[in-house]
Image (tube, rainbow, N blue to C red; front, side):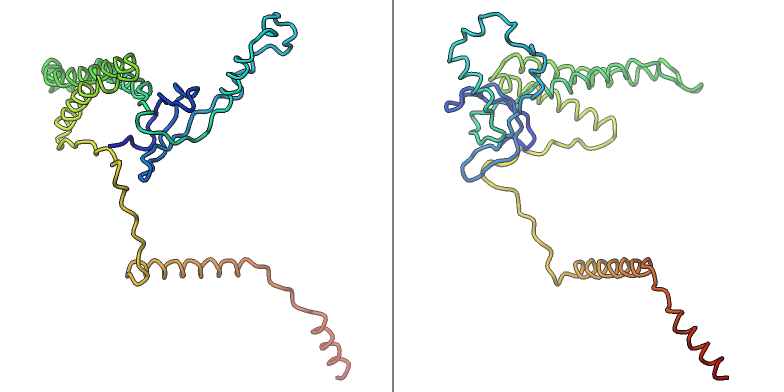
Length: 256
């Protein structure tokens, strides 16, 4: 399968744009025809160089002797494309973000597990601790094993994800099964990765003669009519022409 949309990646082994190797980005799609990832490349912050000296003349004369190669390198670094299409071999999963999330989850779990527990008068504190201790400790062990595997993957570089994939999968599966057991539910496996050759099923539009579509259409018409009536009620009414009625009254009084 392929990497799902939203996966954080690191570019690698690019030949035409070797300067982009090591840049990070996000997978935004997959082209089924040419078998390429659509990647949004992270852009450098424009304010990153705001701490540079305001007057470069006060700097040492070594900057004036910079080589043309360095100037070309700076120009190339600035020309980072916002979007890129790359082959699967040119992307490496960035494990930094999931490592931080898993380490935070493990830390929060240990803090929650070691918190003081309140028991009622009819409960035995030692019995409660004996019943809850082993499964909670097992969950902490699963999370710690997965975090350690991810840390090894980050340290392993480009081949780190392949080296720790099995260990990390086993640890997370154990945590998932234990959580389902504690909740009294059936464990559910995560969905498989998206296919690289078969696009997702297209959305089928609702037919015009479908009963549900007719009901929705009638409801929309009723709502539109109600809005139209409210607008008419809010429009200011024109004042009557009282001058003509006054003339008629005067004419009648004079004739009488």
